[in-house]
Length: 101
Image (cartoon, rainbow, N blue to C red; front, side):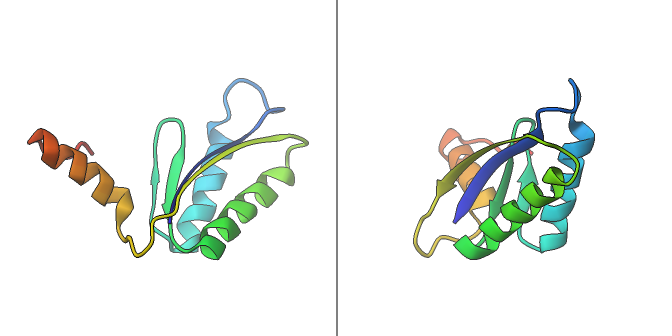
């Protein structure tokens, strides 16, 4: 499955990139494929793995914040693999272009 999520504390001021970096560190340590975007992070794996990582991210932020904003989108396609890169490559191929990095 492919999951896109946004997570940040709402009580830490205007710039929260340091807190987002803590979330990305949890994703990186998980060993699951992930990709940081400007407004969200995509992560790929099985349900329990992915949501275990998201829970760990939430738990990390709740240690330093009283309020955490979270949005989660799920694309659960049976037997699909490498969708983080594959979906982008498929669209680029249909356009006759190289995938954007």
